[in-house]
Length: 236
Image (cartoon, one colour):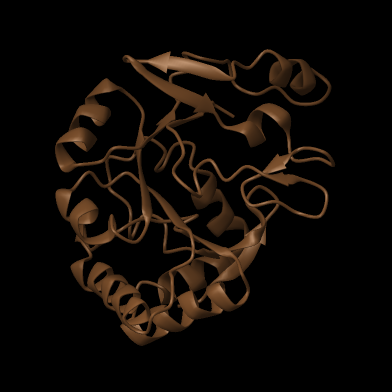
């Protein structure tokens, strides 16, 4: 599979895999066709769309090679910065099966897997059953109904996306963004569960700030990378 080395938000301590937006996503996704940054990325950077489409066709051997490269580089692996686990509107069991085969073959060689994490709008028990042993899985949810569906599917970690702007207004531009960050809550109680506000969103990624896996100028968060807590992504 084709991958890249992190980005400004994720940091440089990870590799990133993406799939074609829309082609691999649930049509019910709250972002799709409305306010999806991933769709915007594919529109602006045509090559990213081509990469996503190529990654819709997978082989266990190529996934194994990707994971081994990640291990050699001493990085973590972010699955699906763009895209998700579907193909032709159905759960892509061939793709998931190839991930499992790759992980099992590496473990069989006595090699520990790297930290790997994924957010998904696909609430299907097969995702948890097949990938939960190897990858930290977050159910991307937008409301209580989504959370209930994810719980039934077996998810235990949740990424609450505040598209309804319950916990913060949309991020302003310019100097007002600084005050917006300062006012963000570190912790929110949603439907009885604790959610840590994404530290990168709250503190920023500038020098002295936070990114998911760190850079020379920012500290690594690792909250989602290691599945340490539920996370709240504010409207931005």
